[in-house]
Length: 209
Image (tube, rainbow, N blue to C red; front, side):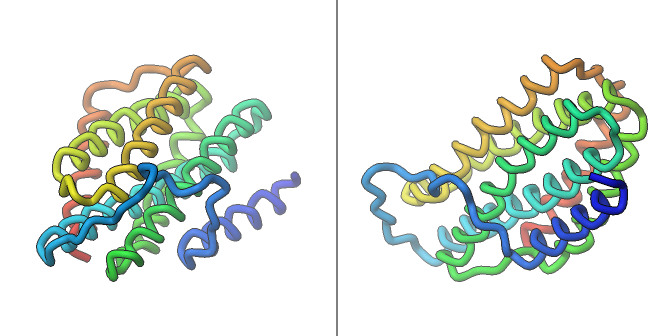
């Protein structure tokens, strides 16, 4: 695609992400058969808050991958980012649908999260393939840890949410491994710490708003 086409594609992605227009290409993960147990009001609120945080993470993932695709001229790297972004679009659709089932809403700050993540992804992409892939590997590693904590906190009765989070975690681990195999550079410790602090601010805010 020409540069103009790439920019238009990024704009289309932003609109589709923020409007909830994405439809998953894979079936929603679920235990077989899925029996959505009756959750108490407190359990439902907790599940919704955690799934809202996960949905925000997927909004950011779309922004990051699309910004990194825009920033690189490496065709193979673009294809790798595009494949990962398609997985993340499934996650985006799954978490949004689960929030609807829980009668709750996505984060009101999603446009802000998307814009911030896009800027970070663009910067990482401009620093070269190794750094860009290193950013992916570290991001996915931190997301994996974050999802593990959610599996520990989600109500045992909420089998639907737990199945979604488990599949998301499996995908994120694969993305990190693929980035390392493609030549990811290990990021400096201060950068990793800054990423963790930024993620903490986002998750705490999205838990409520």
